[in-house]
Image (cartoon, rainbow, N blue to C red):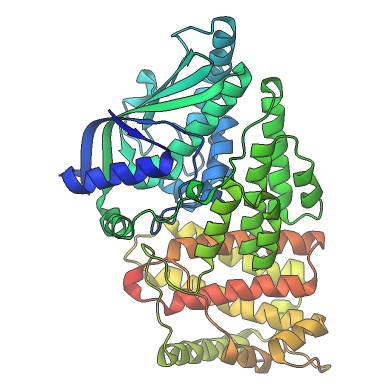
Amino acid sequence: MTTYRNAEEAFMGELGLIDLTGHEIVVRQSATRELTARTFEILHPTERYISVRGRLNSIVATVAETVWVLAGRNDLQFLAKYLPRAQDFSDDGKTWRAGYGPRLRNWHGTDQLSEVVNMLRSDPTSRRAVMSMFDPAADFTASKDVPCNNWIHFVQRNGRLDMSIAVRSNDIMWGFSGINTFEWSVTQEVVARALGAQVGSQNWLVGSMHLYGRHFEQAATVLQLGPGTGVYDRGAESVAYDGQWEALNHDLETWFRVESLIREGSPEAHSAIDGYPEPLLRSFLRVVHGHWLMTAGDLSGAYRAIEPLNGTDVGIAMSDYLARRNSPETSAGRDAAVPFDSTALGDLRGALKTLHRRKSAAYGDSWKRRGELVGVLANVARKMDRLENLRNVPTDDTELWTDTVTDLGIYLLKYLTFLADADAAVARTFFGDDRARSYSEGVEGFEALLAKFTPIDREPRGALSDLVAIFERLELGARRNTLAVADRAKLAADMAGICLGLLLRRPSQGRP
């Protein structure tokens, strides 16, 4: 059996084996390269952070999904805010039918995690501490969502708690290295803490360890670049779980309340994070806080949010994430950035100018008559709803989403002229003056803004996620009056820039 030090070494080792000796097969119309019946051991599973060049994994999505599973949840209302593609694997667009959370924490009324802890507390040498996730009565069915990880077993020996994981099917990019090693290491650590044991090794049995065709090119880049200097090679101190078992459910409930404050931009978020009782879950809140600040355009604030994590594995992994997401250079393995040449940008500005003049002639200034909340933001919200609903439009039908992104971009620029009327600082920022005139009447202000507005490039699926996240913060902050006018303008400007960037992307690069 192959032995690896940690999750990153396991990822690179298994990926290399798949590349070298994997068999090509087509599974459900998807080209796949796989190895069957893989067995291996991870000696230090709490070294859980993977920071490989070209891998581009999101620590934010990983910590969010891990806490979501541990809390027994399977709703996409929460998860999709951090993992937009989650809806692609749902039968109803609302839940993961086979989500691990309910199966582990409430399977037909049984909390398997609690049963394992109770069993090993009463009989430390028991071999019966098993958690099952495959349900024979429910999972022999046609579904987008059949559990891939099927069985977990705990064995406590010599003061150490080992975990064995049986997996029928493991996508090495999105499954194994994206979430599974991480979520099970946290679960293992929680149980070990409840038992007063040390975290032992993880032993994996994977029926099919595979790489999908959509990731062949990225995998080649990852292997060519090599792992680089990993999180733990940089002397990172691990943030350990230190909670009380009896307080776990309460701690998780509190975690989601604080997460909501963070996402809403509440001024209470800072103190709520600082006051959170458990260090590992608190570090996850700092990660989430940094993410939402970055999403709102406050990169320096994002780095400040994770300053208490300096020198830790969580802090280094999040710093890597922020650096990758905001690097001016194209990261290996990501879609190549589209060069926005002057001709294309000029053509786009001309088209938007013409369209806006036509709409302005027809509707005049009625768009702002009912004010910011009832009129302007409500219209932006409708366009955002329309854009989100277009997830199910066939990928070769780009006209609908192009029209929606165009309307949204125009309206966001108009919103900026509205905010410039309301705040002299916004006028100075976007128009270079604070003269007592209306920027939002007619077409002059819009066209002046359009002429110098800079597009922001985002990969389409990530762009939609960014737009949704930014708008949620903008709308909530405006309705609660917790965001200054200048802050609202910055968020609206970021959204407008993303819309313009999407419209400048090559058609072959797809839609959000």
